[in-house]
View 1 (spheres, rainbow, N blue to C red):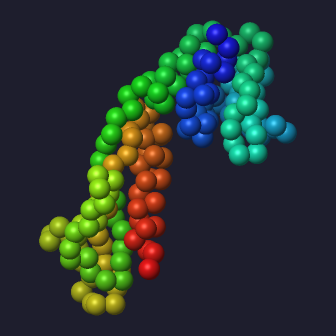
View 2: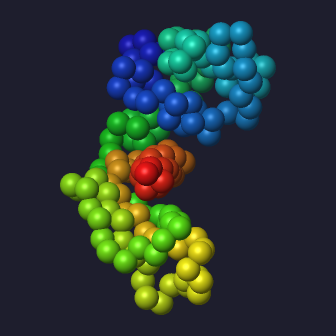
View 3: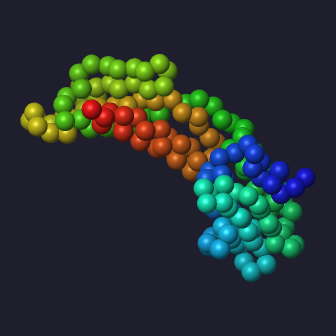
Length: 163
């Protein structure tokens, strides 16, 4: 099995894969063609990327520990392929007007007022908080999960700013 197959390059988001790889190495530095993830001078992975950030090739150093490669492969399989379940995220947005009603778009997201007990501005011209609840695909990798959740929240908060 090739290194590219072990890293499931055809199945995973490459930006998420780069994030997973960061947790396995002491440093990461840019090269002419991509990145070098390095534990020390003898143990490293060279990643060749295209201009869009797609990983084209993975080149482990000679003598790269097979047990480390197995751990990386397991982490990729568990965090980026398996354990991918729909989840509900929530975040706070702010509006120039008080949100009093509810808005739901299919099963993707909804905008709702903050609870009555939440702090609110006492003046009309202020940033009024509201909640955005949304679905996203979670990951067992907490870093990847956090990025996915934040990306979806940013999308839906941005939609509320369109006039």
